Image 1 (tube, rainbow, N blue to C red):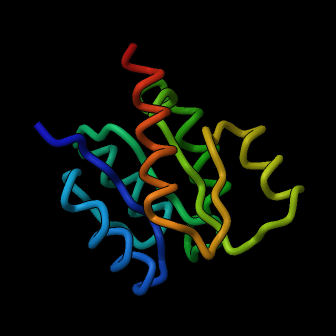
Image 2: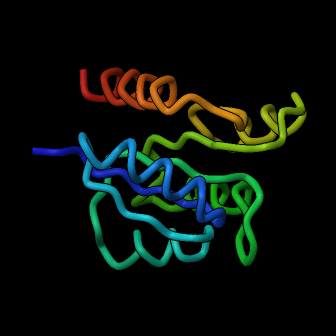
Length: 125
C-alpha cells in the first residue's frame, strides 16, 4: 500500500514537479496554502508525511507548522519545509517550531524523497 503524502504549496510549477515525481510511489494530495492543508487534515484524511512551502498566502508555512504542532491529532506528522528562503534564521525558526527538516529551493526531488523516507523509517522502526 502506498504511503500518503500531502503537498502544501501555492506555486503551480512546484506542485506539478512534486506531484509528477512523487505520484509513482505515494498517494499525493495537493493543497495551495496552509489553511487548505489544515482543512484537509481536519476532514479526517490520514496522511503519512507533509511537504509544505514557507511562503504562501492565507496561511504561510510557519503558521502551518505552529497550528499542526499545536494539534493533538497532527503534532507528530512528519513535516518537511520547502522554501526559496535559504537564510539560516528561517531554517532555525521552522525547525524550532517543529519542522522535521528544511530544504531550500531549487531542490532535487530525489533528495527530498530520501529525506522523507529517512524520517518515515525512523518513526516506523
